[in-house]
Length: 154
Image 1: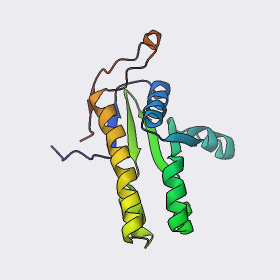
Image 2 (image 1 turned 30 degrees about the horizontal axis):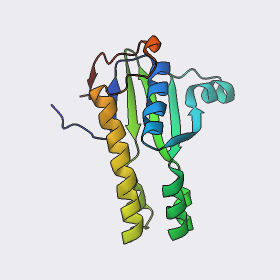
Image 3 (image 1 turned 90 degrees about the horizontal axis):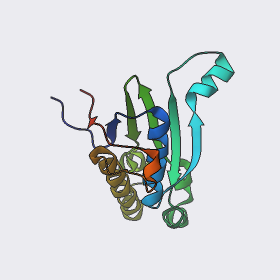
Image 4 (image 1 turned 180 degrees about the horizontal axis):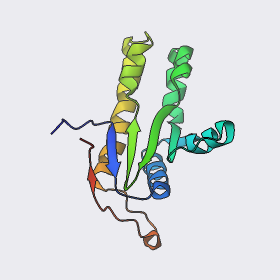
């Protein structure tokens, strides 16, 4: 068995449910989804190619973004935080970009940038853990979402 990737979660939900749940849990953790790129629809429109349901969500927290941009405006090139949501048959894989890796790759690894990246990383890890544990039951019981099963791909 391979070690678990903390930035990857497998959900046994429909693709639309997974998109809605990921967005809602991000919001509950203080991050709004400001972009939603429907890769499947874009590839169909631009290239007439069919592709499995796949989206890239861009999320950010305004106070953190403000603080980061005040520190170094180049940080804007790394925003928003990207999360991919991909349908693979009976499962949906959610992947989070690791902010610490992104800061390191962009040569912005001073103490303040690192602290901000660590803060964002902790929130994203918390979101991933909530999804992994099935802690996403909606406030509206009529939706009927239930955690069926969650595992990492091997």
